[in-house]
Length: 185
Length: 81
Image (cartoon, rainbow over all chains, first blue to last red):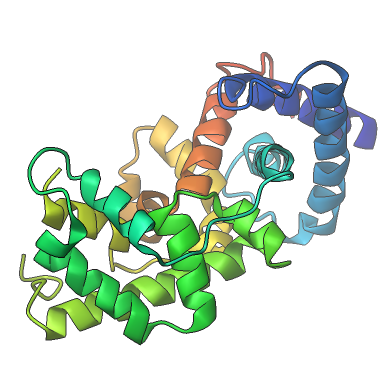
């Protein structure tokens, strides 16, 4: 039973790594095989540990696929970023780049009222940890798994920090009249 | 993208989001509901909300959906059980 499960999850791991290969062209060959094997090993352990949580509301394979996809996903991202440092600076360069994402028109963040208000909110509303996560994930597009790895945390815990930070920022922008309260748009 | 759209993208949505762990627990049901033409936005709105806000879980969802649809993994050895 476990051998069969491992075979299934190993095939799934390779399929998923192949599906994402355009995102990680630098990882391949033996290194990728090792990564998939480790993902399948860890997924088998996770599936057997959490078997009580399987409620039969979906096929067993679909449920089990979730675990191996998560393992492949986390391992690929960590591997890709292991030499890098996550950008957490709440600086002019970051905000100028965000402002430029608006496309044509005004380029400097100083000229953009809403973005300026958002930057003020980031400075005044967020805790140091919330700011670190918001700047890395929302402003710089760093994957949550990578931030979780650097902070020795989990995807779920980092997402919670991000979610709470976004809520604080949204409420401040609503209070100041920059955004309409939810449900009124 | 307008400035307002950009800020909304940075802030995500504010609906009932169960977080990564909550969405993961229901991901298989969500995927199969979608494959079966179920209205998962109504049946599992929290998962749908989370997948809009969390790119990492969205990417994982796409992987599970591809496997469950048999588009990449081939035969399902458990299908007959």
